Image (tube, rainbow, N blue to C red):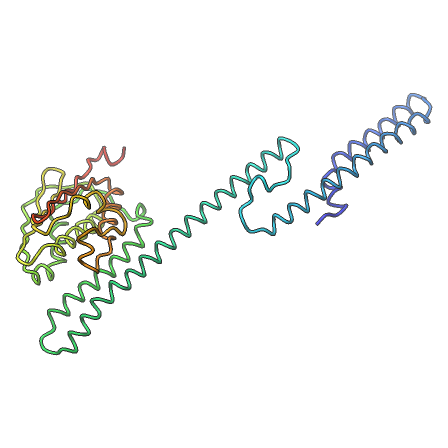
Length: 329
């Protein structure tokens, strides 16, 4: 809101200089014994010029305030073109700062909206996924008979989906959750395999783990997460009676299965978010999230993850761990 008081405060330096100039002009003439008429005429002319300038300046000041008030009522980001014209370098700098902050706000807002949309999409998909084992458990209970084996498998899937959503939440701030040090690789691998023992037994898939006298620089919890995603896919796409082999070569872990394999056109995209490929379209429950998250965690741990596959033969996933100097470069 424009007020005379606000304008006087805005131009107080000009008025202070005017009053000081008049005062010293009168004082010098008085001490010098000069006629005071010239002082009065000079003061009147300067005062007239000052008042004329003040009128135009006050109108301009009021226009700027009114313009800024309208912009303040607009909640959208302020483009430079919408700001009042800058009359000096200082105002240009202020407008540049405002424009930069406005663009930063717009980018932040867009990032938040994108993250919310991704979360909504994932949680919607997660709800549909978890409904499947719940439905299977309900049907098993209604059918009667020995349902323990079915309930155990479906309960495991529900637990896995619950763990997945927790990891999905944490992955946004992964750096603060990492504990990087040397871990025995075989212990991590065997714990991951043990976790999926129920599904291995149910599908009659053999697992062969070669001895690994290897320690790797990583985070044990998140490396287990990567191994579990790879094993989950291997189990899902390996027919009953198949085999999964796990072995290590120096600083490299290899997980190989005798599953249905991946088509060549899908190989380059299996780590993309939401991409399920041909195999995923066969399995309606496939989400395309597991390998995407595995790749994201692997990148955070400086692990190079590579995938090779042949349709009808199987898939080979290779994890190449960093050396200490590589991790901190």
